[in-house]
Image (cartoon, rainbow, N blue to C red; front, side, top):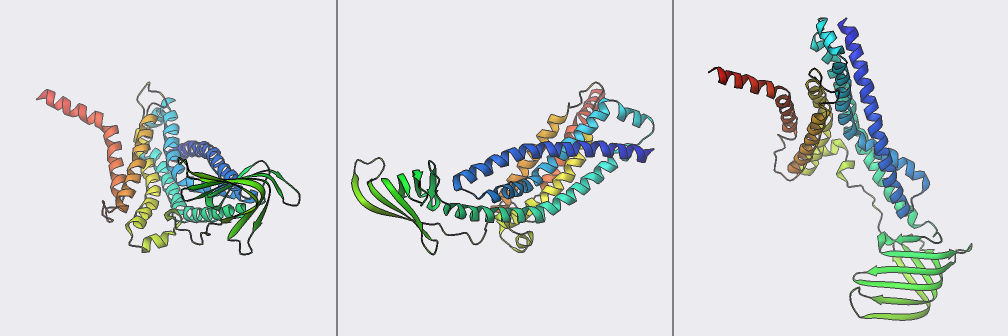
Amino acid sequence: MGKIIGRYVLREVLTAWLLMMAVLLIILTAYEVGVVLERAAASQFPQGVILRLIYLGLLQYVSLVAPMSLLLGIMWAFGRLYHDSEMAAALACGVRPGMLYRPVIALGVVVAAALAAVTLQLAPAATHEALTLRDQAVRAGQFAPLEPGQFRAFGGGSAVVYAQRVEPDGTLGNVFIERTRGPVVEVALANQARHTVSADGKTQTIELYHGERFEGVPGSARFRIMRFAEHTVPIPMPPANTEVTDLDAAPTAALYASPDPRRQAKLQWRIALPLMCLVLAIVALPLSRLQPRQGRYARVWIALVIYVVYLNLLTAGESWIGHGRIPLVLGLWWVHGLVLLLAFLIVRGPAMAQRVQYRWART
């Protein structure tokens, strides 16, 4: 009978966890789509890159979503079991709490192992690919033809070009250009223009015909106005990032081999997230225990507070390790112990306080 009830509890928890995971991923998908589309519109990303960037961004979010969804899934499932008196009936029939908790801990171990594969291997590779694709997309967008009626940034944002018309032969009509050179801002207006790219791809050139140029320093009364029949505006392209240096994209083996505190802090972070999954699964079991007539979600807010405190402590601990304020041997292990102690005090603290008060009253 214990195995049957254990499978029933596991099914309830697994269903609740997957549902929570799906809801959180849908919310993050909507956010990631907005971020990627905003970047794509600003930098003219190729269409084939957008879906890939959304997928890679979601893969990086899994490491944060999995622990929270597991915590809420366990709280939701056990809250229903306690609220509907199914847990009381099982315990009254002689089922030990260990039989009910064992499959949940096993699920936490499996989720933690899967999350370790994500944080140690898949997420860094996804970050590396996303940064590389983004850099390539930005450069590809720089060489895309101008669209009429749209502002376009060039040279890493140092120049902005607008053309009201684009003829079939590539001639631009009613052109506006703003270029920044240190403190000097240059604005040019022209009836026609031509857009060309150098053979090596390092410089783009806008040749303006029949227009005016305004040049000066913002906030200063000194500026120049010049009329021209032909004016050439060279726009150097920013150098390509041939090597991705973001720590989130560094392979785990490279972090492990480096003595740099910042890299060791990032390694500790990647290890801490799977352990966070397992710790939250253990913490959720006593937290989900409800008293008679308590609401199904009476203790969910406590679980959310613990998760927020947990995540903030991990983030702060990573920063402290990177700045040398915490020894590498201690790492982030103290955070897991502190959260377990905090959960124990929340669950058992009131009963312990009552016992101490009762003993003091007797004496």
